Length: 340
Image (cartoon, rainbow, N blue to C red; front, side, top):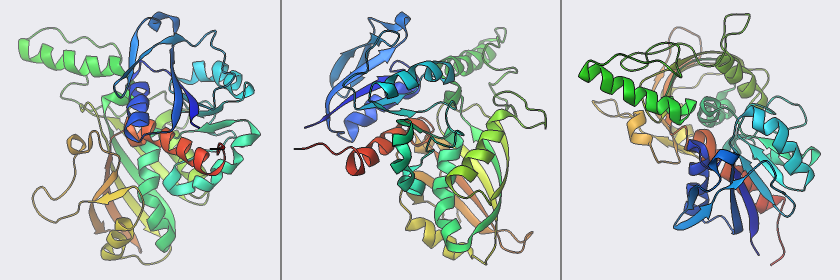
């Protein structure tokens, strides 16, 4: 006996990936419902080779739905997720709406799958920020090995993290430069083509952006509240795939070789770390992949016990859709088992 699953935001970048991954991983579904705004009613969404008619979220009755995968933004989640949870669905929400609420688990399955047991408090589980998800997958085995004291991370985040409008803007600006047309800015505050923008989300009183704040508080909630984190989040002219330059300080010594071996044994991690031309992963090469890739592992001599590494992942997959489906798999394997 399979599960009834709803995908909210099924016409967006992440919603489409959720449907792709449900099909790829053969999630045991008896039914999948594609939901979006009223403007999307009549459109089609694909679940593998199956075509789904998109239905309106506004008046959808979640009764009988087992799991609802949300990727529709905080405003939609704030209204619709509690409604779905009250109807009996377990909501896995990709927005930032519930992440820091103490009675909502924030989960990356390779790191803290056990936290899923707390889903029943509100029938809601939060998916972390895309840049946080790949970071903590790489940090977990290293924290277990030598206890991380401090993380300094600079992100290189693709435009797909800002939605399809942002992807279109990068394409249109790039084309405009080559044909000498005027550059139009819509989604981004500055030109994104052939540029980098050290600004993602709104600015906060201390000078950090909200994206940077998310990385700090989410990493500590998922991994260890004692870890100190500082982030600089940068948007780069890449369509898909987030990259991170990570500098770590540990309580105990950990050599590059020991770190490399710990990462090779870790779930969800792929180490590509040859000290030669091309012996590392770039975002272009991670598109469509499930793994979080780690390269450029080396010792940082500027601190007592330090390491530096390069972390890359498909932000639409591990950073969002894949992580949500993995959480759903944890639920059905340990908490929502159905009788055969």
